Length: 313
Image (cartoon, rainbow, N blue to C red; front, top):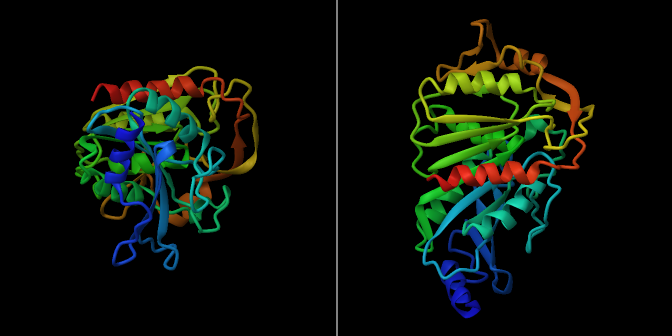
């Protein structure tokens, strides 16, 4: 079986290759069934640091095609380190690999902060990582070892915000993702939904400092036009832990009772119809709260909810 899988991996990307325009480079780790992929995704915030990373894990099966989950980390990359170039993911990504592989999924972990000097508190500097996921999905969908009809997207916290950005008109007709899961987004400032061609699941913790009322409100807006589900896990915080604590940090959670929708016209409008604008919204909605004990008693449950959602597609 190992020999067959090795052939599959070598056919996926040529080991150590850099393409002619230097837009990507790959490293294969056959014994671990892993490919690390460095690729270019332009971002106006980082004009001289366009490269990002993805580490792709493959199940030990003889399937000719794998369903694929692409994962976007949160603001804290506290999970595994990549096999090459120093990339990292979060704890959700780490556990998603183990549980996803057991179900026959290939799992691609994105590092959107690679070589960009970002810290968890630099929230207004974070890249628009949804573009990275779409680019990676586009690249991998052309490979014969990936089932392009079964490509999915997950994100935790900041990553979950990126997942929900797909609701906006700029992305709603994307042809990459069949279904997506947003785990513990904040939902305070989100695009006004446009008609989409994919299904969405939002997972929230009842005691999260990203207060569930915000995402429940956004869920109600989305469901008027798109396929969306909402699951609230009782008694857990942002990290799906029981012993929740609110500390000091940075969180876009100050508009939870009256979220802001951003329209294609450029208008920013609270759910009650009150107009606002970017600078005012950031001042009103950004707080000094942080939360989560990181004991994560219910994290595996949350990941299994996400995988069961994808299994339906």
